[in-house]
Length: 317
Image (cartoon, rainbow, N blue to C red; front, side, top):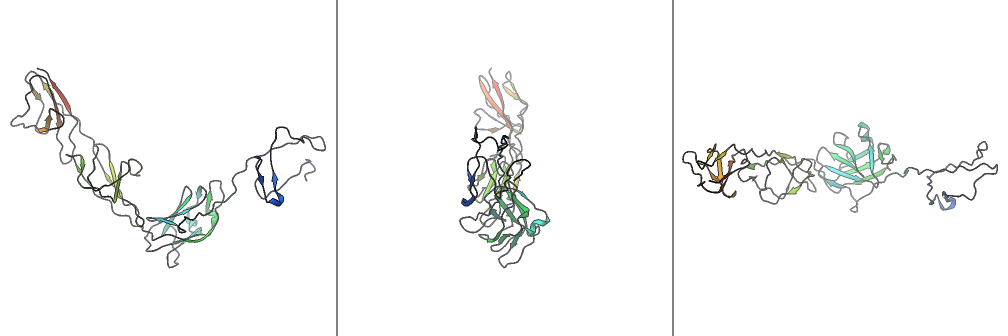
């Protein structure tokens, strides 16, 4: 009782909220509720009550949530430790090794920052290994002061839990695919064990190989890697640099002489845009260009460049 201010001060071990819900144990349950017109508005000294309530922050600590399998999931070199709340703070300094105890199948304690690292991602703690383990590992949280949930609460400790299989920290080597500039495809087939995308993070246009060659688009790089499996992490990424298509040749239509000015043996021509013929500079082999003719000319593909953009020439005489 605060007699000076004529108030009763309650100290609670749990939070309250002005939402009409009941909190506390059944024996001492209480309800907090704001009303537009309280039935009691003044105290015994005729002083108006001051009613205020704030929505308290979440004070519930995050807990480990074991998968239905009863063991921690392993993906490549990473063991995922899931929690039931978003984790926003994790201390990955040299003290983090005192928080998580990681042991191999023989019970040998592994060394933080030498054998593994610790990071937070969403609701998960990710334990990434720098060396492969030939069998399961166990993970235990013995110091919760280094891991917090989104509200700033320390997570609850947990005893040793086991991973669902071995950890493979050895990533497969990068593939070495090349370009067939004439067909605008890869020279090699892309097997189903390989994935590719148009960005190095494999978030844009990610595709799996199908056991066939794939098309390449001039100016758009491709990224390849061996896909992760249950025991192997995703492979090292190959960046296949794909050059832009060269500009169209500087040729012009000579409608008077019915020929093409500037064409040479590095170019090819077509009257339908589908069938292309290499120009023979020694024995000119252009088609008859009298009358109304549309001729397309481009620089031929080489072993290192795509065919160029097309220059369209119109003959009318």
